[in-house]
Image (cartoon, rainbow, N blue to C red; front, side, top):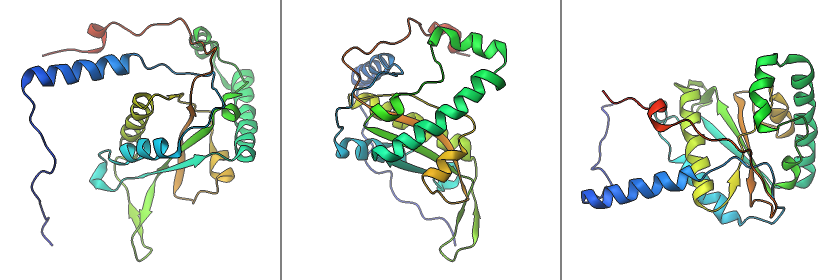
Length: 221
């Protein structure tokens, strides 16, 4: 069957000054984003999380197969189980598996094996990469560019969370197989990221670090 095309929907061409204004405002807004480990337990409106996830689901993906699944966790008991499992992996990492240079790189961030934000944050979003899918008939369906696709969707989700006025943190205890077990995910899914989401605590602090200069990150040819 030949591919079917439709006119490009919803595109609006802006005058160049408007383009510049929008691009500059978006850049400035995202430049204020910081990874936060000190959360308030104040509840977050469910509709806000849904809109952020909707933005993530609009992400491009290999062959439009959308190889992701997002699990939103609010249940305190499940959050406690996730924290316990994550801290067990973190202790093994810090005490046995992490090479000295990795620990040295982490030192300015002040991280350790304790992850109270996994219980304090009102919402955890576990992101799973679907290594393969299934056809409506139940046959195995190969997915393409899985990690690239889920990475782009994750970035869009983090941006949406920030622009909605909430904060988050990319938490990646390794390995994260415990998420599949606790959240009862199917065999074709692999944990990709764990995002605590919420409002910052009133006394929230972040490491005194800076980003690399723009010209070290970008080359124009």
